[in-house]
Length: 410
Image 1: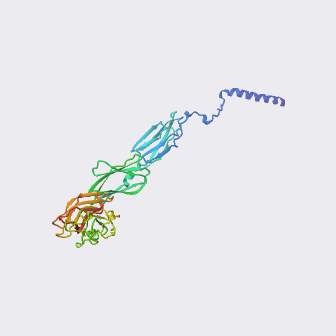
Image 2: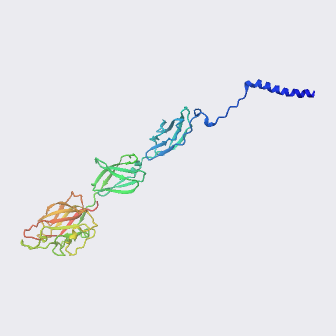
Image 3: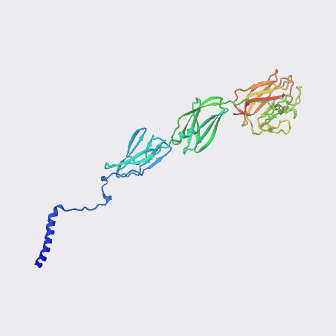
């Protein structure tokens, strides 16, 4: 019995396996071949999330997205979505070569920009959020740092530009046709520009700023009251102590032109003199005689004491220039009026002369007041040329004082 069992068992096992194989053939478990991930068709998934764009924010109220890194083989379009002025804006962008620029964003608060891509298979990527801020044009800030102030016959403009862009200020006074342009390079760390010779009274200044980035500020206006300076009457020795006198001729050291500045009616400028028509005086001792009074801070010295040195004609500064409004010449005394016809000149700070007019002095009063209401020129000196005398036989000239009214603030 043992032997038969041993022979049947192998046959049984073989048959069981054989019938089992034949019976399961229809429901065989198939294990598929493994395919590498990089060989999966791209059409089976969307593009990757767009979170690597470079964001550029310049001082021009725009935000720029550099989208050149888009995978163009799988991406058909990129979408930007954000809220502005209460309205949601979504933009489809297919041009990946140029930067995508967003304008009209608020400059006071950051804006959330949602970005996603759509693949060529129609599938979309996940959204990515960029929090961006648009920077305002520099001009809008610079204009708030421009200040105008009124002074005595002038405006002062305080200039400041600490932005990253060069700019220009444009201003006009009252109803001027054109604006005046002032450069504001960066940095301008606080400079003052003075506009002089402005008439007294109320003025309206209109101004704005344009920056190199193309931005323009709002138009601003300011009303300012320009003042007239105090009219000074230079009629004391103290007020004229620094003035340097010159005379083309003087009779003596005590009768030099400085005597016309001492406020003393007992002293006088007097030329060399003779009462005969046959005077033997040289040409320099006869009419015309020239007087020059330079408004120096410190009086230049006279070597001779007569104050007729050539150097005193153009004595060196510093000066206290004056806008002359009135000149008064005093004759020596009653019955001693000599000088009749004169020419009057103002000498500017550059040395050039302006003729103020021809005048005839009075033969009936000691003080001769010459009004110059329209003069607005700043002078460093006044020049008097004595042309003729009242008396045919006179060959001399004399004057007691010279007073000047004018503005020394400008």
